[in-house]
Length: 428
Image (tube, rainbow, N blue to C red; front, side, top):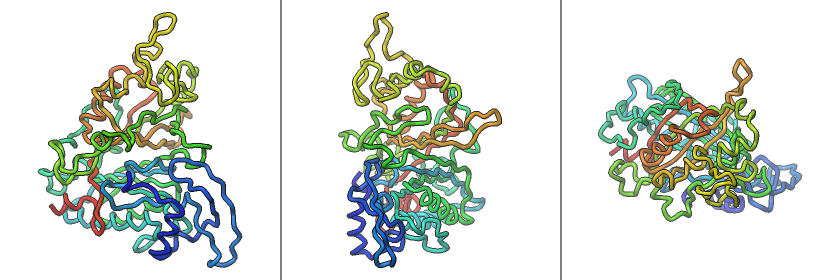
């Protein structure tokens, strides 16, 4: 995670002294804080300082000054802590566009992402949407869909791990909002910074590619809780417990393709990952009619703390054999927490990094809301697929959710300084 972790405010200020002050990195919010908020939700107060001249302007608050590096072993936006705002967008190459156009596009996109993630303006025709803000932990992540390889004549370089996902019984997929030649994930802790990046990349696409679908998401803002906490989804449940952690000994093995590639992934995918994206509608009207006890039975955890029903705290392993006075399992057989446990799925693990969404209301007043489920793994056939198959067969949560869109994308390793994402694939 060292390649993508955020800079603190003091590190950013030190960098500007040697690199030169950019117009966004230090101009704008006249706030100062003695504690770095970071991107994981540590609380801090703001002390506002008066400023009458540009020379007297104080530095950005740490929330705005946090910067994630574009270049590195892995792409940003995978192990980066959850951000407050996200945009997911898929593009299809335009008719007649091929490898040459795709190469030029990835060069443009990478250059723009590098500038914006550093808190700088786009190289040309900047919209000024984020003029007063710093980097705000902006990340931009790029991936390739199954169809990209036939469009560019690179079929022999398509990984077998990118084979289409199987059909699942619970799917109600909208093909127009699924898959795509190219995928972009944008995350930031400021909504204007995130939108600025979305607009800049869409303009960069020019005539080479057009938007296939786009989705907007959000999470709790950093600093909204007194101490770092696992985020909650729109069902009110803690979501992300037992996520793999970069400190785990087997984290890289589970999440990233080995540096030398693998049997299911070609060499250009070294240090990359595979992402499954699912738009999961939550049937909130039905869910909210359930008692708290009923909701906890569906999930297998306490709603208030995320602790398993068998006791302990959020990080306690549930005792799946424990029974109550009547002899019934405390964690039901179809509880979501039981079914998704790695040890119940042959060790299958994936790094979940979602955003919630709300896209208005249906004509009957039901909210069109839920989860933009995003999960990362070294091989989706060993990560996402076995877990989803098991959920498909008997997850108690299934009656309260609906999978409405889906995508699988190959996300190559990070770009080297002076290079661009996907260079080894497109120039190899």
